[in-house]
Length: 416
Image (cartoon, rainbow, N blue to C red; front, side, top):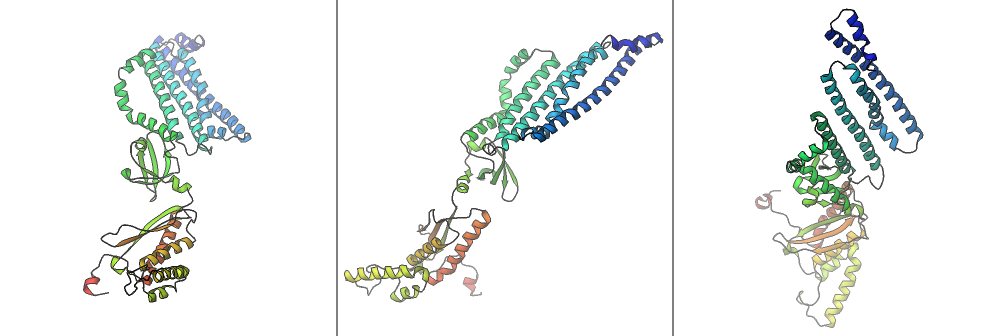
């Protein structure tokens, strides 16, 4: 090719043009012709290769080849042959310009490295997208591992590029680079920490894509939508996005709600605070009045009979209510809450249901409801919990009890 590339030069010399201008014109014409040819050849090759891939992907059952097309793998692969032809053509085009030939050859070699990295990136992105379609892997931090391979690929590519540009052998370049390892570690500290954290998160199954996590330090409370080498993205319930360093998942404390989501219900843990001065023993009249409440009628009849029998058999002086066994309004109310929760359609009866006293406080006596809603969706969960406490708050006066609340100005002025 080099012998045939000089005929324009020879022709111009015979026409009396100087050697310098003949060489320049010869180089420019050849360069123009080669660029036009390679551009056209690259276009045709891309169309052919892409058509082959598309036809093959339409006939195949796997989704992998479709992803190759989406990530432009055929397009990047098609550039390889024109680049090789350009590399072969440069010595012929720049025959009379050895300095320019050397620079352009190095430029093509560097571009070849970049093109190779584009192909690798297309393949890695295809693998990443394909793995995300697999049920066993779709919630794993695939992005982190792909990014690690991509970083190593780019690092090796950059080392080769510097070696080509500077003319220093790769091993000598890497040896010199080893002396600067401390600086490299400092620069890539977050990347290294993120990589180690990604492995630990995956192995220990701490977080998956789709998990609901709460991370107070970073103000995150929502679903994990992405896990990559450096960051974890959380879409909060207000639709904002919080970015958390990946290594924070193993260095700080956070709450993963996956256990709740995989369980049979979502926990309800809320207390009513009752004025302690409203708590008292029940008289016979009080018990008879409370028996009208159907949910505790049977309970009161049995308890009243058992208490009456005990006090009679032990000759208890009932002229004072405190003597012997007695029912209290708060105890009956607690039993009413327990029965009400057990009969509520929104509560999972197979999980813990408990109504308990908490330690008395300066505000009063907390009666806590501990149960699990059968519907874990946020809106439905809040509706079930509100429905329960709407009823219980309205039921307090029926037991001659009072709920606690801080006094307002109307308590002092008498205005309503």
